[in-house]
Length: 211
Image (cartoon, rainbow, N blue to C red):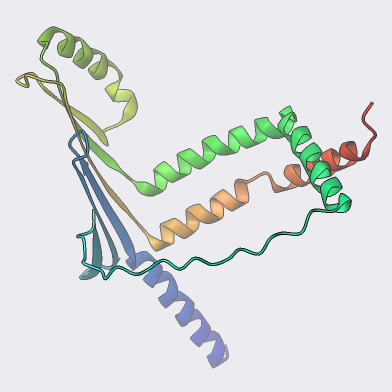
C-alpha cells in the first residue's frame, strides 16, 4: 500500500486511542439544605485538570453599568403578522399530532437511558429519621426493590439521627470515545424522517382555510 495510506491509518489509530484516553470525572456531594459541593476533572490520566464548585469568590472592581438606548422596533407589517399566525397554526397542529408525540416520547425514554448509561454514575445516600419504626418500614421497602435497581445505587439508614437527614454522594465518569458513541446513537435514533413528514403534513393543513 502507498505510504500515505499507512500514515492515515496510523493517524486514525492514534486519534481513536486518544479519545479512549481522554476522560471526564465528576462528583457531587449534597448534605441537605444549601450545603453542597461538586468537582469536575477532565484530561488524560496523570494530567487531569479540575474545577471545584461552588467556586471561591474573587474580588472584582465594581464597574458602572452603562445604559444603552435600544432602538425602537418598527411596527410589524401585515406580512410578518401573517407569517407568525401561520407558524402558530403549524405548532398547534404538531402539538395535537399523536403519532409524532408518541415517537418523541419513545425517543425521550431512549435519550434518558443512553444518558444514564453514559454518565456511569454511582449514588450513595444516607437517610435518617427520628422514628425508627417508620425508617425501618421504609428500609424494608427499599431492600425489596433494591435488586431491581442494581448495585450502583446504595442507601444507608441512620437510625441514630434525632432529626430527618438526607445525604447524597454522586460520582461517575466517561471517556471521550464513549461520549461520541452515545452522541451518534442519539442522533441516529432520533425520528428525523417522521418529524419532516409530520411537519410537511402540518404545513399543508395550516394552509387550508379555517372552517
